[in-house]
Length: 111
Image (tube, rainbow, N blue to C red; front, side, top):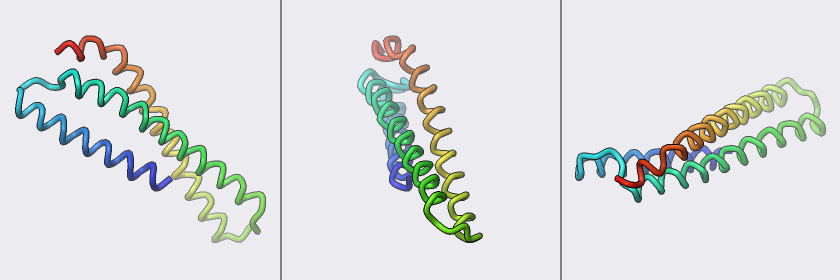
């Protein structure tokens, strides 16, 4: 889960830097190459977030089956499940964003 978070943040920072530098150089928002990079990058990050969420939630379920029901362990598992749920929410939001950007991709790639 942590690797999905780190890779997602690195992608977001890279995309922000590329967009800002392109805007400063050309004055337009996004060129065709950057539009395709953003489109396919969103797909990869969405799948990565979904995979991290599934792994985290699966791990929490398996730990609940096999470990004792100590209070510290249950608190840890509950926090891990909350983090995995946030990853799942991020994956859903990223998928929706990717779908919306795919509708506008032909218009953006012509610029």
